[in-house]
Length: 258
Image 1 (tube, rainbow, N blue to C red):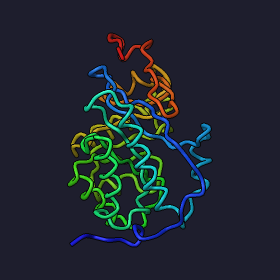
Image 2 (cartoon, rainbow, N blue to C red; image 1 turned 120 degrees about the vertical axis):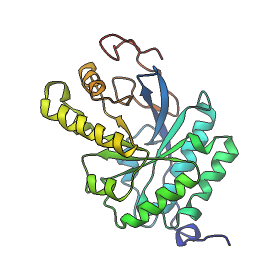
Image 3 (cartoon, rainbow, N blue to C red; image 1 turned 90 degrees about the vertical axis):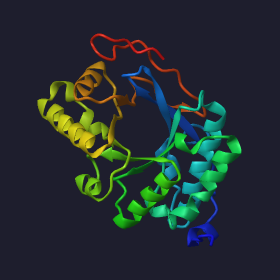
């Protein structure tokens, strides 16, 4: 029997247009681009805040679905190989029935020949979880479909460790405010080292986002982090893949080659 949900049956149409910018996620251990995060932008390059300011309860479902489809359609024509991941942000509170709401995503991936194993869905702890059990069902369904899941902005939002106690995503993305200044902060170094060790025990990969300096990267590498994202590597590029900065040292001894 085909599962249905109220969101799939209605919701206000979008009265605005948008596109995606892509920012690389770099694996510094293997010296390669691991994937790209799709970041919503206006058609003329307006920031995410401009777009999200037009999202409301009436059009939230349609917007969430349209973001997924747009990101996958662009990735289908841009991504260099079948091992490159696409990270898509989603709104847990816009998913009514996980098995039903994923259909548009699956259809878009099939249409452009994009493998489901390449797709990662990020949800942020900055969006208050109305129903944690519901989020757990979403993660279980997405894993069943072959997707990766990630908890974004870890360390900055509403629940943090309580969310990890309830469910374990494949990745956690450290919030940039926790990272900023780590090169000269023993306290931040200790906190991130402990979070990384905890994640390792839970089978979760840690990704450091918002990395801007070589000093930050070296301190994060010392904590055992392998995946990085931030302006040090590349700024997001509108509807295209930006070149990765290769002019910095990944550690004191190794050079990254894009």
